[in-house]
Image 1 (cartoon, rainbow, N blue to C red):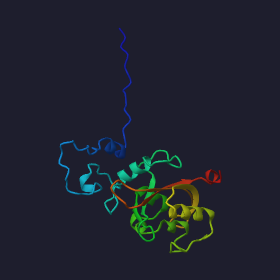
Image 2: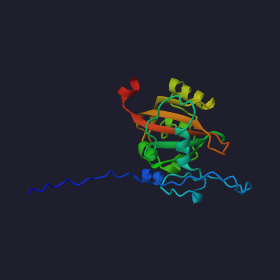
Image 3: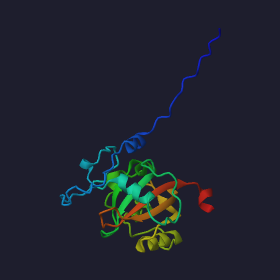
Image 4: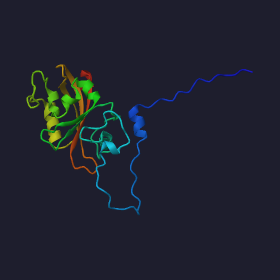
Length: 209
């Protein structure tokens, strides 16, 4: 009697972000008999969240997982972002602070631009519009009248989301075309207005289309 050997079945493994997200325990709604007066405490604190993964928290304590969920669940999206996770080059700016400084940037953004995260935090995102070795100030732009820069500034000022191709510069001065998506959001129980930026290096052919 002939015995057939079966090939081993391999199950695709999830990356750390996916596995942590799948095991995330969301807070349950309070039962009708539960005490209504509970101590007021922010939900966006790293110590309270069971997901511990490098790069998920801004120094201010903002939960980047909640940021991404808010982007995906935003009402009336103007365009499709596709898959959104921490592998994307990501920045978060606080629009309520003077200069709308970057309060969070991840390793993917650092690899894309060549800037360390510490060099990026506190800067206005406009610094990418010019090579910093020549124009070290965000307000001094290589091309002040760029149509893309003007469209981006108008969208940020009016708190509208926008997706466009824009010329940016890496730390070494190298020019690249950035497919930039900027999404303004507010987190639940948080009145602060944030702007979430997704950065993708685009081919010149894609930018021309």
